[in-house]
Amino acid sequence: MSRNPSHLPSKRSPVRSLLRLRPYVRPVRVRLLASAAVATVASCVGLVIPLVLKEIVDGPVAHGDPGGVWWPAALVLLLGLAEAGLFGVRRWLVARPLAGVEASMRADLYRHLQRLPTSFHDRWASGQLLSRATSDLSVLRLFLVFPLVFLLVNAVTFVVGIVVLLSQDWLLGLVLLLPTAPLVVLCSYFETRYALAARKAQDQAGDLATVVEESVLGIRVIKSFGRHRSMARDFWRRSRELRTTELRKAELLADIWAVIMTLPEVAIGSALAIGATRVADGELTAGTLVAFLTTALALRWPVESLGWLLAYSNDAASAADRYFEVMDTPTTPDAPETGDTGDIADTGDTGDTADTADTGGTPMAADPPRSPRTPKAPAAPDGIRFEGVRFRYPDAPEGSPDLLTGVDLHIRSGETMALVGATGCGKTTLTALLPRLYEATGGRITLDGVDIAELPRHRLRKLVAVAFEEPTLFSATVRENVAMGAPGAGEAALHKALTTSQADFAHGLPQGLDTEVGEQGLSLSGGQRQRLALARAVVGQPRFLVLDDPLSALDVHTEALVEGALRQVLATTTALVVAHRPSTVLLADRVALLSNGRISTVGTHHELLDSSPAYRELMSGERSPIR
Ligand SMILES: Nc1ncnc2c1ncn2[C@@H]1O[C@H](COP(=O)(O)OP(=O)(O)OP(=O)(O)O)[C@@H](O)[C@H]1O
Image (cartoon, rainbow, N blue to C red):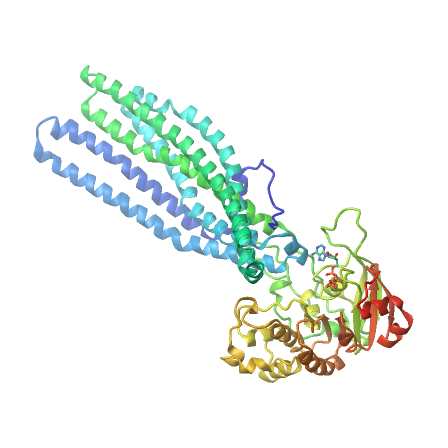
């Protein structure tokens, strides 16, 4: 059920992964550096407090002068307030800009997803993409807010603190430094193992999101087949796997934390014992020992937080890997806007380019510059030509034959061609090649003589409108769903399209065309969804129309009505209509039979009934030998 082609090899450098965030961090680097500087100053202010304590103990306390305590005490209070205030300023400096970084990364990811080829979406589970766009990006933002800054701040605080300790008493300072070497070794061992667990947990969370999404979308099927228990069991199994991985992470964190907490405590205890003995021997003042121990205790947080910071940095490195796996997937190159594609290219409006132009996925990348178009003489209306078109799916089993092995077909301008063939022979696939949802692996397709590979995709898709067998509607109003077929279409065009597709029922919905159709349009019947999808396809009066069995979910009565209206639309366009039933075939001027990856025969419905036994079998509903 889960598709996640991205599981990484086990070896990777977290630093290298995190360095890839540079382009996104660059615009906020000044604030980030300022926040690190402010936090470092705040931490170092905290380290001054023990020195003031030393003066209190060795001065007023040792000399029995209570009145002398007030001024140093007020200084300690001031230092404490300054430390707290500076940490507040640090937060203020980064909170808003880093929320902006997260938002821009998310926007880039979404834009890139829109541009990735259909074959990418065939391979990737939606839950995996969802978790990368949501939880992974939150992890990255939190990494930039805390661990990134505090790894630096804590390291500086630690070094400054150690210098202060050594300057007060080098012997006690060395005792405290002793655990550093074993800590470094243990932390790097921990980091390697934690990185693997972190990646596994994020992938499993993505798989779980896919299961939730699929079960919510398929809730009707699950309920009607009484599959809720087995689905719940599957969900429970996956969530147990995730829980096991999360527990493994917690175990690793607990282990390293135990080491990180214990070693410094042992060192502080030893320093206390040695220091107390030396104070008793008169080798050390009590004030120095108090200052030493207070400084050592102040250094506990920078050391103790190391485990947490490393763990979080590893989570962030995995999240960065997962993010860039998607961003690194190349988009299919688009044809340049050269303007030498004759009449067919001259569609005026450049349209919504969000799903077409490839800006390389970097932040702030601009659309490629467009060269001015030179007007050309209109191409002769030649209709649609498939010339030796070959295709195989990228994930087709190795050694399997190509799905399309050389399709030759000419649909004359203004003609409607029905495409028939046995189930699974590649009809839908062939129609998907026309708007370049998939790229043909061989041969070429022309529209009015222009190779579609030479047309920028957004212009191609303005020329070719499609209505799929599975009508997909979005959680938006009826108006927005239909207008998607021709952004900017006026009311008159909208009403005409609804009438043509027999979707006038939309006017009778509670808020008319402004009625929200619910997620995936599930508040509508299958036939209603199909008619709205049809309206979307015809609203822009497209020059070329592709209909994939557009009448399959309609009852006999509505089908007859839609057919009548469709005839009018088809009369004004060049159309390819995938047909399964004679009633749909009869909408077409001619019929092409697809078999064994090729068009085996073309003719009118009646000609083929007379001349082609395979076609006769197909139309009569008998079992067909054709693939
Ligand atoms: N995204 C994909 N990746 C790999 N194989 C695919 C993909 N989509 C379809 N196929 C395979 O390609 C073949 C043709 O599918 P297609 O949907 O084009 O057939 P069809 O003729 O339209 O079938 P039907 O009449 O049942 O709608 C099938 O064997 C199908 O399993």
